[in-house]
Length: 434
Ligand code: GDP
Ligand code: IMO
Ligand code: MG
Image (cartoon, rainbow, N blue to C red; front, top):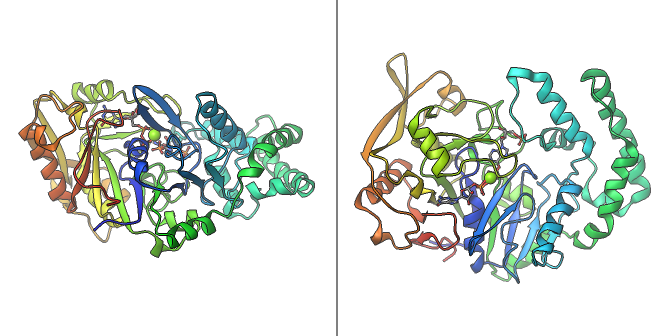
């Protein structure tokens, strides 16, 4: 079964290749929607050898005649948004005609960024390893009902008053709790003033526009940021991001109903990576881990930090299938495992020699299960070369066997396989959009 709307989410700790796949599938849709996260995301598209890294703007933007939406669930830094629009327009991409932003998006203020950084410093060894983009403090303010929103740009007189109150609070924390420099009201207002004329024409009721597209039977892609294991509720808390990264957020964060989401595709790397701190049961600190890091060019698209690497974890993957109602998988970066003698998949965790989790324990959260556990592996023969292959039948038998194992363990079909960073370096077995 295919659907008019497909939600794309990461099944791991982010950087699974969501951007590449969203860009690829955009050729068949009318709209692409971001619904959570902010410019902590770094989504890489490679078209005809040219690389574009997007942080806030949906990964459909390189296609003309496709509407790109930033839904209410996204936290928006006006300076980051303007910088990204400028970068795109300088390379000839028309953004202002295609991009629409919900007035309900909470703003990330410079003081949120200062607070994020100050906290990480204060936490020392316990630091989360955030991207330093102010994501956590901005979501805190949303829930605390003191956010300024994109829609406040319409009312500059009251905006200044609201900013003054919020900044008083932020600066109290910065100066007296973290002993850091305060952020100036004038600088913050200036950022809003500079953005005003650019952003106002793009503000729109995103949920209402999506409803019209649904009524017209148009196809829509919902683009997740981060990944399932970074979800604030279901991830490896506290080493998570501050938003709901799982598929349910596509409805709340775009302003549509859950019934408007038809299909759910999970993106998984053929192995696993993680940036920042926190548990990672299948992490490899050896030659193979280095092979993955070097061959996979595993450096963060947002902060440039080295990503930690390890084997694919099917226990976590299965949990992601359940948490996101995944209907299919896309396996990316298969080519990065080329040339390895054997490849491993984690199929369970053991503690003190006893196998404690085989599938996923329905009574225990993943974070509890993996604390202090050792992964159990199944080992499969490796293969030589999959790089750039576009036909399933051209894949080496052992690579096909590896993919088969993933399907069996996950319990859902693989519809797309990625064999290189380029848009065309892809095998589409079945288009989830039909
Ligand atoms: P996202 O955050 O999920 O969109 O992923 P990122 O863009 O942060 O990281 C994925 C990285 O892998 C990017 O540099 C992509 O260009 C690259 N990439 C995506 N798919 C493939 C693939 O199949 N093979 C290889 N070698 N690289 C890929
Ligand atoms: P994309 O969309 C990988 C990680 C950070 C840190 C934790 C919290 O490109 O997959 P935050 O700044 O969100 O408060 O940081 O989450 N993180 C990501 N890791 N890919 C991302 O996004 C990430 N966004 C946040 O490294 O560990
Ligand atoms: Mg990324």
